[in-house]
Length: 118
Image (cartoon, rainbow, N blue to C red):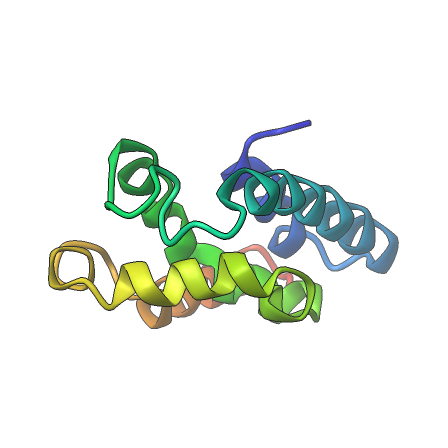
């Protein structure tokens, strides 16, 4: 199993449908692990936003791009994980510190155009 970002990048870095589907399945497998680890807790540490949350939340800026090119919604597969993302992004320290998902998606679109994938 790859890391979150390499698995997600594999979704948008090709236009071959079978490669996209394989990459999406790999990404969702990783999300299944994270969803199981999160469980019913608000944060990975329990009731408080902690180290694991800090390490993972920055990666979620890319998730809308993965969803766009993988043609899926994380919330449809892992609603608890999607709720954690929403809850974490609602924190001022997160939303003011990280690059917005919209900017990341626009960046991905630009990169895909540069490489002839759009």
